[in-house]
Amino acid sequence: MDCTVFEAVESRVRYYCRRFPVIFTRASGEHLWDADGREYIDLFAGAGSLNYGHNHAHLKARLMAYLADDGIAHGLDMHTAAKGRFIEAFEAFAAARTRGKYRLMFPGPTGTNAVEAAIKLARKVTRRTAVGAFTNGFHGMTLGALAATGSTSKRRGAGIVLSGVDRYPYDGYFGPETDTIALIERYLQDPSSGFDVPAAFVVETVQGEGGLNVASTAWLRRLTALCRRWGILLIVDDIQAGCGRTGPFFSWEDAGIDPDIVCLSKSLSGFGLPLSMLMIREDIDQWQPGEHNGTFRGNNHAFVTAAAALELWDDPAFRANQEALTAQLDRWIDETVAALGSHGLAARGRGLMRGIATAGDEVADAICAEVFQRGVIVETSGPHGEVVKFMPPLTTRPDRLATALDHLSEAFASALATTPDTLPAMAG
Ligand SMILES: *Cc1c(COP(=O)(O)O)cnc(C)c1O
Image 1 (cartoon, rainbow, N blue to C red):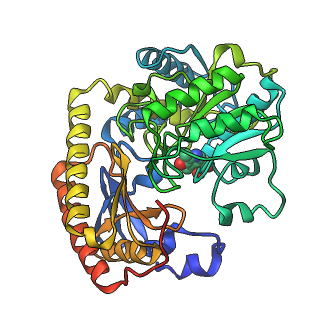
Image 2 (cartoon, rainbow, N blue to C red; image 1 turned 135 degrees about the horizontal axis):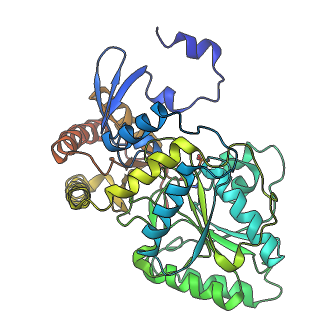
């Protein structure tokens, strides 16, 4: 088999396969192999869906035992033992990490389904229409979540007017001097600013697709306080930043805030199986039975692996590896930015959700293509696709990350030597 079958038959909408034009056959941990037997180190991790790597042995063993035992595969939203075990495990896990009391809701299995449900619930509970979303935010591709997404090219794909969302400036959007929380509050105080008090703000603590922009702890706390003052719900979209990607399991844990609704998906199943979930503060869980229904709500195979994934957080070796990788990546980014400083590089992100901003998409794409030739998978992000993104599985062996970073150093040097820096200037 070669790539012609995909090119001839599959829709033109396909995307990632164009950037990595091989046929992948097997994967384990931080490694992927293609049909020619070539090995790749995966620093993209399914856009953050594989925080525990590919086919993690502990998760796989649980799933194989469940399958062998004819465990329920599909059950609508009926009670299943797999779901019950996950809910029990998650409740105890979350209670140890958060202050709020949350109910769990399982909408359709993808991230955008969680965002849609969160926005719909916030509108219902507050009886307001407007939702506040932030510059450079990304929340998914279905119409409600798409309206909250910043990217013009993504929103244009809707083909209709997307409404009901007001855009507010994220932390640091106008540079370090501008206090964007004060600016937002000013809008809300002025009855003719043109901004209606929103039902909710939907926010990422680190903007995954928007360029690895980080909201400070102080900003998150002030946003939370502003929400409380105005009776606005705070929805944290932790779909990409959550599940340990930025450090703690919940990206907002250390900020000491209590979101009203939390959206989780990507690495929640831990195995790359589709699963998404809302954590809803108890008093705002005002759904009527069946009011937000669907066929695939809660994926039982994913419940099995998701419960097993939570157990990894009790393993000190898992946490130690995560910390070692974080320090290793941080050091390499600092060295790279310092060594190639004349090319205008800038460090981005937090934890193992990191990136380096380059002069533009031409350079960033050249780096990705170059390093793919050397057997490393990385992707770009940012409003202009100018940020090279590094998201190794949290379980990556440090010597494999070191190998990948050596290849990246070479790719940066070679791409920067051949691609002009005189691309359109990027803000921030
Ligand atoms: C990926 C992502 C989504 C959408 O998830 P899908 O599973 O692709 O629908 C929403 N929000 C954030 C922050 C994401 O990274």
